[in-house]
Amino acid sequence: MHVLRSERFAALLLLAAAALGLILANLPFGDALVAAKEAHLDLPWLGLDLSAGHWASDGLLAVFFFIVAVELKRELVIGELNSPAKALLPAIAAAGGVIVPSLVYVAFTAGTPTVNGWPVPTATDIAFALGVLAVFGTWIPTRVRVFLLALAVLDDLIAILIIAFFFTAEVDFAMFGLAAAAVALFGAVTRLMRPRSPYILARRPQWPVILVLCVLAGLAWNCTYRSGVHATIAGVALGLVASRRPGGRAAHALEPWSNAVVLPLFALSAAMVAIPRVQPGALDPAFWGIFVGLPVGKLVGITLGGWVGGLVARRARIGMPLATGDLVAVATLGGIGFTVSLLMNELAFAGHPAVAAQGIIAVLLGSGVSIAASGFVVSARSRWHRAHGGHAGTGGALSR
Image 1 (cartoon, rainbow, N blue to C red):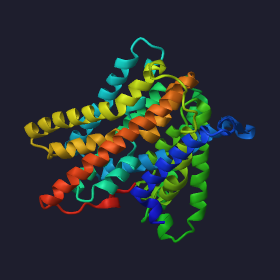
Image 2: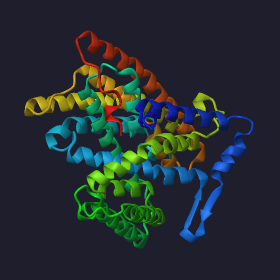
Image 3: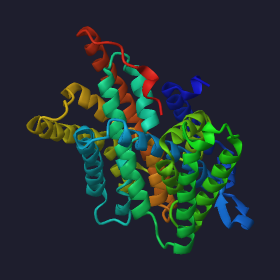
Image 4: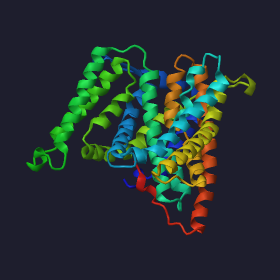
């Protein structure tokens, strides 16, 4: 189970799953596999009508977002975001890492029907970025890892807000109200699982509470999906309302499943697309906006945001800015969009399947460039820290 929690393992498995999906889709029987992904697996008695691909992106991915939300809550309560002073530096860097890639994308797509795909290159994949850092950054100081984690968590928070506000059409408020009620009940019931709650101190069996929590989580997800809001938001809401310690234990238990099953299946499904047979000049501007926006936009945006944040921190005498070399290393890691970018791509181009296919290739290529660049930069920075008397980093200690 320890291997399944490893950042290195999670990153490698995610990459392998995406590569496998792309390869399978372009083999002679690829069309049949893509058709199978689009086949619907309906549960009419639950009001659900989803394709196999949507079960992965709307269903399984809610588990991943639950873990992200639990991590976000921990950082906000006791971690690196629990005060304005601590949150300032990564917040400004994260803002730069969203604004600049968006502008890069719009520069390519302004005046075209696909300009609304600007959120696609704004995301950072926490699991992948930390995995690359764990592989190449043995001597990178812990504070750099903490900064990357805080930045990526804030980046995911922005992505969650984008999904909630920009990719929600009509809302069924009755279903949304039921989802909210289920989420509130879920949060209340998790209080029973706190270490010193009367229920636990009375040594009562925990399995009935866990069963109730599972039912409430399923109800919240179902009602969120049927309300018209993207179903992954249910995972976010459940993670945020869960009592901190029970939520942390749940996330810890789910992490191996997320790393070994949820994320690889989503990557396999999302990357299962035929490579467009078009000349580079015939590619949609959205392709170039994503392909350039991820590695270049993120690098420039996070570096510029971190530099501005450093100036603010020095003047206000709060926090300690990262050295320029460490900031650049974090910025190259930030360009690994992968999981959340693939989800954004699916949502942004739902009505343009040809552009969506190009977008998937652009996400994979842009993230691939960022992986290669960050591997080189992080390795060089790690060697610099080792030569200047640094101590070995914590490796997987910041695992989600």
